[in-house]
Length: 287
Image (cartoon, rainbow, N blue to C red; front, side, top):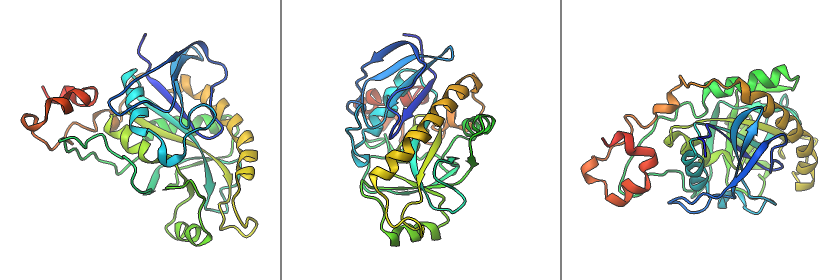
C-alpha cells in the first residue's frame, strides 16, 4: 500500500467520509493494542487519506477509554504526517455560537489518568508543547473554512475534561475564568501523542452548545448535542473535502523534528524491547 500522508480522526457524528473512492479498510496492530477501529484508506479529491473514527463505528468507546496511543501509532505506521482532528465542543464564550467552527491554537489538559505519552518503557522524552496545534495545518483549515462561508473562529483555548459526564455549572464558570473558549473531551492526549510522533496536528471543532454556564441553557443534553452535531458535521465534511488539496506536500513546521533533542535517555540504556516497540518513532535518533 502506498504511504498515506494525511490522516483524519473523526469525532462524535463523523464516522465516515463521503466522497472517498478506491476505499480499503486496513486493520493495524500496534505495541499499544488495537486502534478504535479499522482505518479506512482511500482517495479524497484525488489525494490519499486515512480516516479513523475516534469512538469506533457506532460510537462504542467513551472518551476516557479511547486507545489514543494505538490510534496515533497506527496512523503513523501508515506514513501519516498530518492529522486533522474533528470533534464536537461546547462554547464558553458568548460570541462563539452553536454551529460555529473553531480552529483552536491552545489547550488546557484537565483530564485524569489517561495514557498521554509513548515514553513509559525505560525511555524518557520531553517534547516541546508550547504550541500544541500545528500552526501551518491550522491556517489551512481556517482559510478554507472562511472561503467556504462558514462562521469560523481562528485561535482559542480548548479545555479538555475527563467526561463522559458534562460539566457542572461551577466547573463551567471556572473554565470561563481561566479564559478557555471551548470545552471537549477528546483532544487530549491525542495532541500530545501526535507531537511525540512528530506529526502535525490541528483541530476543526464543531460547536454544538453553550455548555451549562449560559443563562439560556440550564444543562447540556445528548439530545441537544446530536441535533446540532448533524448540521455542524455536514459543514465540517465539506471543509475537509476542500482542505485536503490545499495542504502543502512538504512540511516546514517544527512538528516534524519534535523528538530531535527530546530524548533524555542514553541509547545504551534503552532496552531492546523498548527500541523495537518505538522504532517507528525513535529509530532515526538512535543511529
